[in-house]
Image (cartoon, rainbow, N blue to C red; front, side):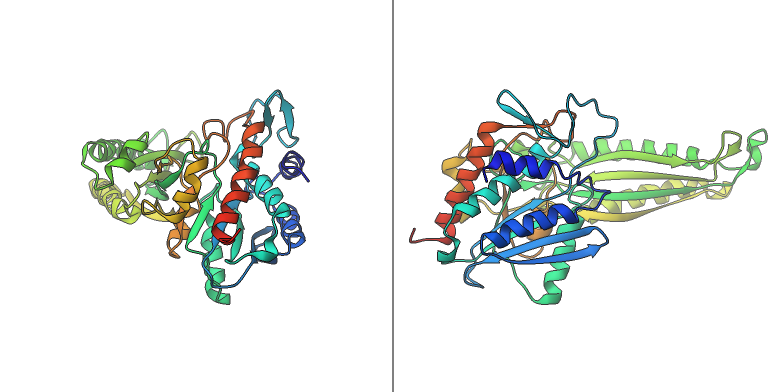
Length: 387
C-alpha cells in the first residue's frame, strides 16, 4: 500500500471527536499487526479507544511515534469537495484530517510496512490516541491505562502534527476553565426584583480583559528562543463560549463562561488559574449584596510541552527539517501529557497548521511521501543502530 491509498482510507473514516472511532482504530491496529507488532487497544468509553503497538526488545528505550485519530467537525464549513473523501487537485490532497493529522498516520503505516522490523535493536512503539482535538483526553487516559498494566514508554517521541517539517520542542498548553455566574430570576418588567447573571458575567469579562493586558505586559520566565518562536509570546485567555438565560422576558439567574487558557511552555495552568479565581471572587463579592455570585473551576488541562534542547531525536530529525533550530508550535499536542511520563517529544510533521481545522484542509502530495521517508530513516537510525 502506498501513502496516498492509506490516506484515502483514513480520511474516509469520519472520526469527528463527538463520534466513535473504533473502526479507524481497528484499521490501524490491523496494519500494525501485519507489520509484526504486538497491539493493544485500550477502550476508555463506548466508541473510544487508544491503540498501542510495540515491536523490538522491551525496555530498550527506542522511539515512540504518536498521533491522534480524531478530527475537528466540518459543520458550517464551505468545502469544495466531500470532506470525508480524499480529493487530489494538482499537488494537493484535500480532506478533513488530511493535514491534521492523518497524513502522518498514513505515512508511518506505510513506512513500517516496508521496514525489517524483526531486526530492531531498540523497541519501537506506536501510540494512536483519541480526542486530542477536544483536550488531549486520549493520551491522558493512555498514561493511566499504562500505569494499571505496568507498561512504559520510550523517552523520545515524534508527534507528527503539521509543522511543515519544522522541529518544535515546545508548545503552550490549553486549560479549559468554567466560570459560573448566579443571580436571581425575576419578570423582566420588574428587573429590580432580580439580579442578572449576564450582567455579572459582563463584569467578569471586563476583568478578564484587564488580566489579559497584565499577562501580555509581564516578563515571561521562558526560554527566549522559545518565546521568539511563538506568535503570541504570553499566556492567552479566550472566552470561547457563553451560555445564559432561559427566556427574553426573564432576568437571567445563571450564566456560564467557558474560557480557554493557553499557558506558555514551562508554566502551570493552575498558577494562572489562581489569578482568574481571584478576579472572579472579587466580582462575586461586589454582587453578593444583590444576591449574585460567581465561581470558577478547571474542567481540563492539556499541559504545555518543553523538551530540552539537543535531544537525540532532534539530531536525527535535523537533516530532514526545514530549519536547523528546534523552536515552538503555537498549538497544544499530546506531548504535554507524554512529558508527565518523562517522554521528551519533538512535534514534526507534514502539512501546515494554517490550513488545519478549516474548509478545504489539505496536505501537499510531496510532503506525504517525504514523511514516509523521514519515518523510515529515523526508525532505522534510532532503533536499528547497526543498519
